[in-house]
Image 1 (cartoon, helix red, strand yellow):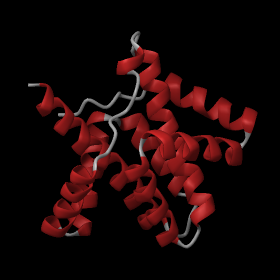
Image 2: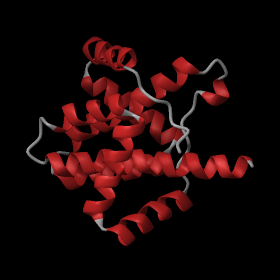
Image 3: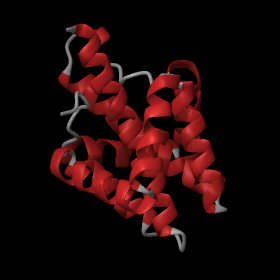
Length: 164
């Protein structure tokens, strides 16, 4: 179960137009500013993953677009601003993410995250795949997308539990 918005094709196309209009660097900078203000744990995860690929600046463009895509979808489906935000990843959720990776191993963790994204957010997975396919470090870039996605999923589940 996840409370993340399910990205639709129309929203993915809207992001592509934004990409064309303002450019990848500006979009990446906007996403980094937003993440720094609203989701610093997630920004740190993204930056570490991007750095591990050896092409940090270029990969951060994709990670920023991934986050922006979820934000756009959340704002599209919500009429109330409080519900238009994505979960703010806590240090505890980040620890839970690390624990899952340690328990399952990185390959199994990534495979399960990809399967979850395929089942619950296929347009988001398509965006990640299309972006990552441009890099010789495709597996590492996709693993970064999986880490970002799963951190948000873990936090959304934790947030849901705290509501009950």
